[in-house]
Length: 189
Image (cartoon, rainbow, N blue to C red; front, side, top):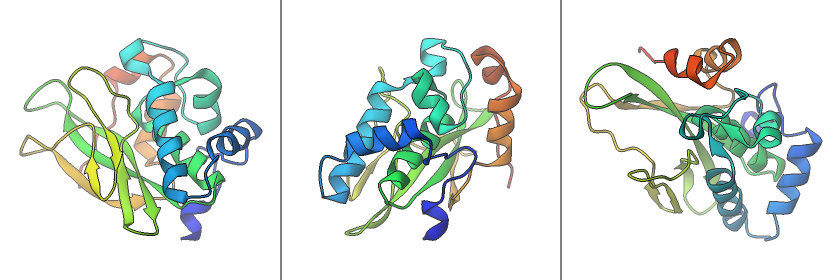
């Protein structure tokens, strides 16, 4: 579990902004309540970059918090950081989804897995709700933003302690939300 509690370049939970926000969200002594508070904060208070066409492009958890915006991947970095700052193991998960409708092109979608004492690893998706997209925290049932509906879509197996390289590349090499959208990362097994 140690890997899912570490601070890293992009899940920089030791940054003062992240530490302070994590403390603020941890009003409960119950880990499950803390997870819900952190999840709802990221889902509802951090704007999805593409939905709102907001720059700058963020990747580090502290930048997502500072600027209040991030693509799904960056939002998952912030949620992992807030949970880890509260000593709750959290990792990154990915789905491969179609971008526009059924069929190609495809891209990765970033979400989280959190270790809940009562249930084990549980996936949550703090992407941000909007018309047609609803994600909730309701363990043990997962209510993710996007169901798998196309034959080439899939839940990518595994829980990562750090972001996938293609995700970091998309968020650090593209300087606007439009460029990220044109260069969304994909996963080929």
